[in-house]
Length: 240
Length: 240
Picture 1 (tube, each protein chain N blue to C red):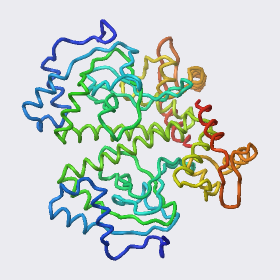
Picture 2 (picture 1 turned 90 degrees about the vertical axis):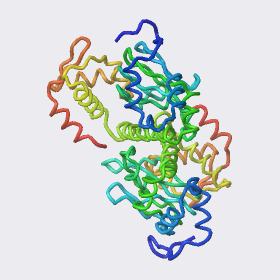
Picture 3 (picture 1 turned 90 degrees about the horizontal axis):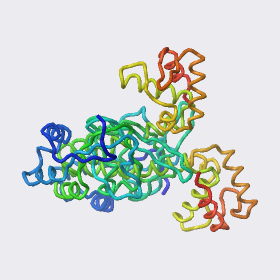
């Protein structure tokens, strides 16, 4: 779904939005009527345009995000401008690092961008803060989400530190095809470089090598995966 | 304190041990009498010799550890044997990754070694599991500890990925002196290499360079820091 402006706010939550809150938040049944009303009053539906910076360490505490559609990417950035992707979140997933001010044990801060035009349910940080201060089930949920992301980050770290670049690129291509259920990936070399924490030139060079070896075919604007077993073999042989 | 065997178990908890449990676990006051008794019955005091492998991904779920004295180190290990230190824990700190089986959101596993002869209070994983299943305050505490470690790991990751090696070594030496309150560090080059995820030869070469520049003096078995401002300047100038 396309957004009309960079961050377009819907006027009202619809029945589907409320259903999504209910099914996503296991603490829903532990809320009092007053707490449910507070949560709903502090939630809005936002459409973010592709490339929007949803959160950065310098802006205020954005709040908790629930992805309705599209994808957001969380990354850290070095002084020199090097980006390292920590994880990406899709439909039905919750982001609490955009509300790291609410979790005192989280002392780092990240960047969060919309990778595509995307819809999110946004829960105001002051509202979420009030809920979690008064209801331990809410706090527990936020901490569990954070622990899930901890696992994602350790996985990303192992990839970055222990895997050679060709294996990392192969893992990425295989993951994307299984995620999308298609062998054609509509991704630029620049996007791939950001996802796996590398430079565009390095990605292009390796993709050309993969193409020469018959593992992929490069088209304008997309990449076709033609030999998955060869990519899988490469991954298995390349642990450092 | 020296241990007599590799992992020597004390027969009984003493009053100090129980006091430490009380002050460390904020959920103590939320436990019923039965739960307190269960916790105490499942806790023992263990002395681990320096170099002991306390936990590894292949052994069973060890349980929750509370450090009484000494230091433990948590690290990941590549297929090829490369170690990357995630964090170290000292007196009064709690390790839950040794009980990652108890936290379903934690899907990775780590190695944990005793860096010195050390004393820990060990809480049996079955006992902790029972407590957290029945008391949300216990689960909440374990998740908060995990979120703290998440912050440590992101810090370590930024160091590994964004900082040049000389700056990482300088950060390490400065942290150690401020931690120990002394300018003499009783550490081998091999130990430093493990802490900062590098090879002994690389550490030795850089330390020799630091010595030539007048920042440190190398002695047999210890390193003397003689110019902290120069090390600090190096850190500030070397973000990638």
